Length: 214
Image (cartoon, rainbow, N blue to C red; front, top):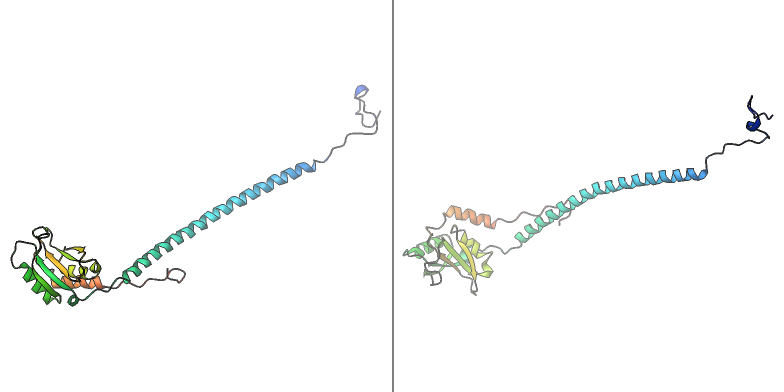
């Protein structure tokens, strides 16, 4: 009986010979597969973390870029305001005072007051048929397109609520057409304040975050 046969057993349960099964170590292929799966999991986590960081910092960059664009737009608007034509002095503006109301003598009274305030006076009389009894507001300041940002706004400071319009005239004269709601010129102190605000220069552009102007 072989030494491998347990006591009390024999027959078909008898183990004979001098060879017996041996336990084998786990296959190396299984370890390789497990290592590959672990590596893929780690790589996936690292990739996800990188995307999160890109989103965070990328969002800040986009916000900064948007803010910088807004600052540049504001600066460009300030530059455009400073590049407009210089405003003329009242003495450089020749005004035709025309009465479109039934009130007699209104044009002369208004022209005399404008002359005291330094404006040059041209024609004084009744409005043409195109405007006579047809101006419902305080008045219309009418002139060439070239005076849109110069003489028209200067004269408009003298009549509160006056409309500003342009036509195809060639000369530089301005018409002040008095409407049905016209009572008097704006108070001189109020007109002077409006004129000073109109002539106030735009502030200089501030540098951007990198020290450069837009």
